Image 1 (cartoon, rainbow, N blue to C red):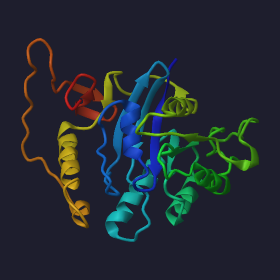
Image 2 (spheres, rainbow, N blue to C red):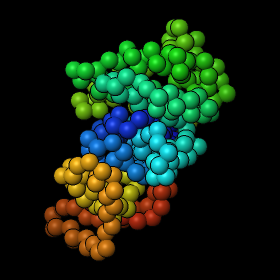
Image 3 (cartoon, helix red, strand yellow):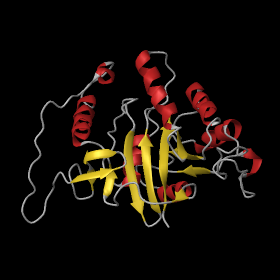
Image 4 (cartoon, rainbow, N blue to C red):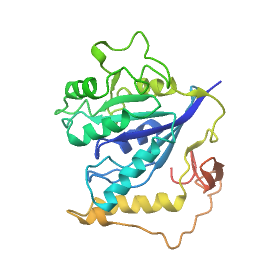
Length: 271
Protein backbone atom coordinates (compact mmCIF):
# COMPACT_ATOMS: atom_id res chain seq x y z
CA UNK A 1 0.00 0.00 0.00
CA UNK A 2 1.49 3.40 -0.93
CA UNK A 3 2.16 6.08 1.66
CA UNK A 4 0.35 9.39 1.12
CA UNK A 5 0.08 12.74 2.84
CA UNK A 6 0.57 16.49 2.85
CA UNK A 7 3.93 18.10 3.66
CA UNK A 8 4.50 21.83 4.26
CA UNK A 9 7.81 23.34 3.13
CA UNK A 10 8.83 26.17 5.49
CA UNK A 11 11.89 28.35 5.86
CA UNK A 12 13.21 31.89 5.74
CA UNK A 13 12.85 33.97 2.56
CA UNK A 14 15.21 32.91 -0.25
CA UNK A 15 16.16 29.59 1.36
CA UNK A 16 15.31 27.80 -1.90
CA UNK A 17 11.89 26.36 -1.04
CA UNK A 18 10.35 26.92 -4.48
CA UNK A 19 13.44 25.66 -6.29
CA UNK A 20 13.38 22.57 -4.11
CA UNK A 21 9.68 21.96 -4.84
CA UNK A 22 10.26 22.21 -8.59
CA UNK A 23 13.26 19.88 -8.40
CA UNK A 24 11.45 17.23 -6.36
CA UNK A 25 8.32 17.26 -8.53
CA UNK A 26 10.26 17.53 -11.80
CA UNK A 27 8.19 20.42 -13.16
CA UNK A 28 7.97 24.22 -13.01
CA UNK A 29 5.31 24.58 -10.33
CA UNK A 30 6.38 27.54 -8.21
CA UNK A 31 8.04 30.65 -9.62
CA UNK A 32 11.54 31.56 -8.44
CA UNK A 33 13.62 34.73 -8.33
CA UNK A 34 16.46 36.29 -6.29
CA UNK A 35 13.88 38.69 -4.79
CA UNK A 36 12.89 37.59 -1.27
CA UNK A 37 9.26 36.63 -0.62
CA UNK A 38 8.46 35.82 -4.24
CA UNK A 39 6.02 33.14 -3.06
CA UNK A 40 2.85 34.73 -1.70
CA UNK A 41 0.41 31.83 -1.57
CA UNK A 42 0.36 28.16 -0.69
CA UNK A 43 1.46 26.46 -3.90
CA UNK A 44 0.78 22.73 -4.22
CA UNK A 45 3.20 20.41 -5.93
CA UNK A 46 2.58 16.68 -6.18
CA UNK A 47 5.19 13.90 -6.17
CA UNK A 48 3.93 10.44 -7.11
CA UNK A 49 6.17 7.42 -7.52
CA UNK A 50 6.40 3.78 -6.42
CA UNK A 51 6.68 4.88 -2.78
CA UNK A 52 3.38 6.77 -2.77
CA UNK A 53 2.23 10.36 -3.13
CA UNK A 54 3.29 13.54 -1.34
CA UNK A 55 1.33 16.76 -1.78
CA UNK A 56 3.76 19.58 -0.96
CA UNK A 57 2.63 23.01 0.21
CA UNK A 58 5.20 25.63 -0.78
CA UNK A 59 4.74 28.50 1.68
CA UNK A 60 5.94 32.14 1.76
CA UNK A 61 9.24 32.82 3.50
CA UNK A 62 8.96 33.31 7.27
CA UNK A 63 9.85 37.00 7.56
CA UNK A 64 10.28 39.08 10.72
CA UNK A 65 8.24 42.19 9.93
CA UNK A 66 5.20 43.92 11.42
CA UNK A 67 3.90 45.17 8.08
CA UNK A 68 0.36 43.99 7.41
CA UNK A 69 1.29 42.17 4.19
CA UNK A 70 4.19 40.32 5.83
CA UNK A 71 2.04 39.40 8.82
CA UNK A 72 -0.51 37.93 6.42
CA UNK A 73 2.16 35.77 4.78
CA UNK A 74 3.38 34.59 8.18
CA UNK A 75 -0.19 33.55 8.96
CA UNK A 76 -0.19 31.48 5.76
CA UNK A 77 2.90 29.66 7.03
CA UNK A 78 1.51 28.93 10.50
CA UNK A 79 -1.89 27.89 9.14
CA UNK A 80 -0.20 25.42 6.79
CA UNK A 81 1.31 23.61 9.77
CA UNK A 82 -2.19 22.55 10.83
CA UNK A 83 -3.02 21.06 7.43
CA UNK A 84 -0.22 18.55 6.98
CA UNK A 85 1.12 15.18 8.15
CA UNK A 86 4.75 16.38 8.21
CA UNK A 87 6.84 19.53 7.85
CA UNK A 88 9.99 20.02 5.77
CA UNK A 89 12.10 22.74 7.41
CA UNK A 90 14.61 24.15 4.93
CA UNK A 91 17.66 26.15 6.03
CA UNK A 92 20.07 28.07 3.82
CA UNK A 93 23.68 26.90 4.20
CA UNK A 94 24.98 30.23 2.83
CA UNK A 95 23.40 32.36 5.60
CA UNK A 96 24.01 31.99 9.30
CA UNK A 97 20.84 31.46 11.35
CA UNK A 98 19.46 34.68 12.80
CA UNK A 99 16.45 36.03 14.64
CA UNK A 100 13.99 34.90 11.96
CA UNK A 101 15.39 31.38 12.12
CA UNK A 102 15.01 31.34 15.90
CA UNK A 103 11.40 32.54 15.67
CA UNK A 104 10.52 29.89 13.10
CA UNK A 105 12.21 27.17 15.15
CA UNK A 106 10.11 28.23 18.13
CA UNK A 107 6.96 27.85 16.04
CA UNK A 108 8.07 24.39 14.87
CA UNK A 109 8.71 23.20 18.43
CA UNK A 110 4.97 23.43 19.06
CA UNK A 111 3.78 21.39 16.08
CA UNK A 112 2.35 17.90 16.61
CA UNK A 113 3.71 16.35 13.41
CA UNK A 114 7.24 15.22 12.46
CA UNK A 115 9.64 17.90 11.25
CA UNK A 116 12.23 16.81 8.70
CA UNK A 117 15.20 19.21 8.54
CA UNK A 118 17.25 19.91 5.42
CA UNK A 119 20.11 22.30 4.72
CA UNK A 120 20.01 23.62 1.16
CA UNK A 121 22.75 25.07 -1.10
CA UNK A 122 25.47 22.86 0.39
CA UNK A 123 27.32 22.92 -2.94
CA UNK A 124 27.70 26.72 -2.85
CA UNK A 125 31.20 28.07 -2.25
CA UNK A 126 29.95 30.05 0.78
CA UNK A 127 28.06 27.12 2.33
CA UNK A 128 28.50 26.44 6.04
CA UNK A 129 26.17 23.52 6.84
CA UNK A 130 27.81 23.06 10.25
CA UNK A 131 26.33 26.38 11.39
CA UNK A 132 22.87 25.04 10.56
CA UNK A 133 23.61 21.78 12.38
CA UNK A 134 24.70 23.65 15.50
CA UNK A 135 21.59 25.82 15.36
CA UNK A 136 19.29 22.81 15.05
CA UNK A 137 21.01 20.96 17.89
CA UNK A 138 20.24 23.93 20.13
CA UNK A 139 16.81 25.01 18.89
CA UNK A 140 15.24 21.78 17.59
CA UNK A 141 16.86 18.95 19.53
CA UNK A 142 15.66 15.41 18.80
CA UNK A 143 13.68 15.03 22.02
CA UNK A 144 10.13 15.81 20.92
CA UNK A 145 7.38 14.56 18.63
CA UNK A 146 8.49 17.09 16.02
CA UNK A 147 11.87 15.35 15.63
CA UNK A 148 12.53 13.45 12.43
CA UNK A 149 12.93 10.16 14.25
CA UNK A 150 9.51 10.24 15.91
CA UNK A 151 5.87 10.32 14.98
CA UNK A 152 3.30 12.31 16.93
CA UNK A 153 2.89 10.91 20.43
CA UNK A 154 6.01 8.73 20.18
CA UNK A 155 9.56 9.10 21.42
CA UNK A 156 12.46 9.29 18.97
CA UNK A 157 14.09 6.10 17.71
CA UNK A 158 16.97 4.67 19.68
CA UNK A 159 19.20 5.52 16.73
CA UNK A 160 18.54 9.26 16.94
CA UNK A 161 21.60 11.47 16.29
CA UNK A 162 23.88 11.98 19.32
CA UNK A 163 24.02 15.07 21.54
CA UNK A 164 20.40 15.92 20.88
CA UNK A 165 21.01 16.84 17.25
CA UNK A 166 18.39 16.46 14.54
CA UNK A 167 18.78 14.04 11.66
CA UNK A 168 19.72 16.62 9.02
CA UNK A 169 19.69 16.19 5.26
CA UNK A 170 22.25 18.17 3.28
CA UNK A 171 20.83 18.92 -0.17
CA UNK A 172 21.18 21.06 -3.26
CA UNK A 173 17.92 21.95 -4.99
CA UNK A 174 19.88 23.10 -8.05
CA UNK A 175 21.97 19.95 -8.58
CA UNK A 176 19.55 17.45 -7.04
CA UNK A 177 22.06 16.27 -4.44
CA UNK A 178 20.39 14.47 -1.54
CA UNK A 179 16.81 14.82 -2.79
CA UNK A 180 16.11 11.10 -3.08
CA UNK A 181 17.14 10.49 0.53
CA UNK A 182 15.15 13.53 1.64
CA UNK A 183 11.92 12.39 -0.01
CA UNK A 184 12.40 8.88 1.39
CA UNK A 185 12.60 10.40 4.88
CA UNK A 186 9.37 12.29 4.23
CA UNK A 187 7.57 9.18 2.95
CA UNK A 188 8.60 7.31 6.12
CA UNK A 189 6.44 9.65 8.20
CA UNK A 190 3.28 9.25 6.13
CA UNK A 191 0.49 6.73 6.57
CA UNK A 192 -0.64 4.20 3.99
CA UNK A 193 -3.68 5.24 1.98
CA UNK A 194 -5.26 6.07 -1.35
CA UNK A 195 -3.88 8.77 -3.64
CA UNK A 196 -5.40 12.23 -3.35
CA UNK A 197 -4.73 12.94 -7.03
CA UNK A 198 -4.37 10.84 -10.20
CA UNK A 199 -0.74 9.85 -10.63
CA UNK A 200 -0.24 12.06 -13.71
CA UNK A 201 -0.91 15.27 -11.74
CA UNK A 202 2.04 17.37 -10.57
CA UNK A 203 0.00 20.34 -9.31
CA UNK A 204 -3.63 21.28 -8.80
CA UNK A 205 -3.23 24.97 -9.61
CA UNK A 206 -5.70 26.63 -11.92
CA UNK A 207 -4.06 27.54 -15.28
CA UNK A 208 -5.03 31.19 -14.80
CA UNK A 209 -3.08 31.37 -11.55
CA UNK A 210 -0.08 29.61 -13.05
CA UNK A 211 0.03 32.01 -16.01
CA UNK A 212 -0.33 35.03 -13.72
CA UNK A 213 2.53 33.77 -11.56
CA UNK A 214 4.83 33.24 -14.55
CA UNK A 215 4.10 36.77 -15.78
CA UNK A 216 4.92 38.08 -12.30
CA UNK A 217 8.16 36.07 -12.23
CA UNK A 218 9.32 37.58 -15.53
CA UNK A 219 8.39 41.09 -14.38
CA UNK A 220 10.22 40.66 -11.07
CA UNK A 221 13.41 39.74 -12.93
CA UNK A 222 13.33 43.12 -14.71
CA UNK A 223 12.52 45.35 -11.73
CA UNK A 224 14.43 46.57 -8.69
CA UNK A 225 14.02 48.02 -5.19
CA UNK A 226 10.47 48.07 -3.81
CA UNK A 227 8.59 47.56 -7.10
CA UNK A 228 8.85 43.73 -7.26
CA UNK A 229 7.18 43.47 -3.85
CA UNK A 230 4.20 45.54 -5.03
CA UNK A 231 3.45 43.53 -8.16
CA UNK A 232 0.09 41.88 -8.73
CA UNK A 233 -0.98 40.16 -11.94
CA UNK A 234 -4.58 39.48 -12.92
CA UNK A 235 -5.62 37.53 -16.00
CA UNK A 236 -8.70 39.18 -17.51
CA UNK A 237 -9.10 36.90 -20.53
CA UNK A 238 -7.57 33.59 -21.54
CA UNK A 239 -8.05 31.18 -24.41
CA UNK A 240 -6.70 27.64 -24.46
CA UNK A 241 -5.22 26.42 -27.73
CA UNK A 242 -6.60 23.17 -29.07
CA UNK A 243 -4.31 20.17 -29.08
CA UNK A 244 -2.43 19.54 -32.29
CA UNK A 245 -3.18 16.38 -34.18
CA UNK A 246 -0.84 13.52 -33.41
CA UNK A 247 -0.36 14.64 -29.83
CA UNK A 248 0.47 17.93 -28.24
CA UNK A 249 -0.45 20.02 -25.29
CA UNK A 250 -3.92 20.34 -24.02
CA UNK A 251 -5.69 21.81 -21.08
CA UNK A 252 -6.59 18.31 -19.87
CA UNK A 253 -9.33 18.72 -17.30
CA UNK A 254 -8.92 16.86 -14.07
CA UNK A 255 -10.02 16.95 -10.51
CA UNK A 256 -8.20 16.14 -7.33
CA UNK A 257 -9.05 16.90 -3.75
CA UNK A 258 -7.82 20.43 -4.28
CA UNK A 259 -10.90 21.14 -6.35
CA UNK A 260 -12.13 20.87 -9.94
CA UNK A 261 -10.66 22.57 -12.96
CA UNK A 262 -7.86 22.24 -15.46
CA UNK A 263 -4.89 20.96 -13.57
CA UNK A 264 -1.16 20.57 -14.16
CA UNK A 265 -0.68 17.11 -15.61
CA UNK A 266 2.36 15.38 -17.05
CA UNK A 267 2.18 15.96 -20.77
CA UNK A 268 -0.58 18.53 -20.30
CA UNK A 269 -0.99 22.28 -20.05
CA UNK A 270 1.63 24.23 -18.19
CA UNK A 271 4.37 21.64 -18.56
